[in-house]
Image (cartoon, rainbow, N blue to C red):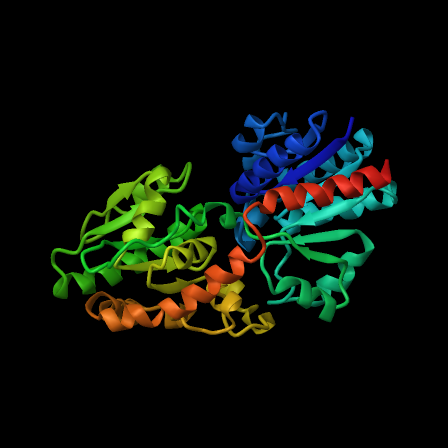
Length: 375
């Protein structure tokens, strides 16, 4: 029986972990799973050591506020891996937590294969992390096509592009027809801190747009477990948007006339659906002081994948209501402005599709190979 210990650190990692567990179960029906995950991984048979919410924290200040809990869960998780002595340890994103666990485990179980599923952004900032990972990571399974070359350049551990999970949903994201009458999508983020930081900015942006687009149909997909904080954040908006469920999200992306989105995974979903967008992002003043460490020209995933900054992005002090409203107005009014993003979207789709339709199956193959060799 193959025993796999998995550690996810937030909701996106939970979804990725669940898909990996399904693929592992198909390839090795007797596989046994241990570790930390959320609702999706629980449905696939994981009995999580503790609730995922205990460690799903993002941002400097929230981490400091939860530090005692995080340190306790860190020690608990590392000891659980050591006690279980599994055939393989799989870290799923959340490197600030999972990599600390891996370092402790490597000292006690030096021959245990440790695989990192989702590369830290070593290509964007703190590139020295890539080489440091060689001490405790045996393989990185990358979601983005440019990441293996980055690890080779930075003398990091072996890195294999297994494909992005959205490759399994390309049919659902295929654009359909023109978008002249589509809604304006607004995506303030999937985390509480992002919602609190971005919704006031987006509300002021919409107040300016409302003058020229009084009948604008604004749609917001509600991320899982974020309905209450989102509804509270929208109370002061000049218009009340339509909130849609996660199951309706892809259909809205395919029909959108334009989108205002917080930088993150949603930008890639929108690009694959062919939805023209404007991207914004703000962090706390303390985190903003670290901007000099960023080593890339864009933080927007489709821009990085295409190798071309074809999607406009506005960060920190440049993300103002007037600038965002002006840029969005151009997208809403001009078909040619919307069309200009389509060539970039085609490049992104081709590169995501190039890895094949089953990234989770490729990832499972790698995990089982390491586990069997260790066994």
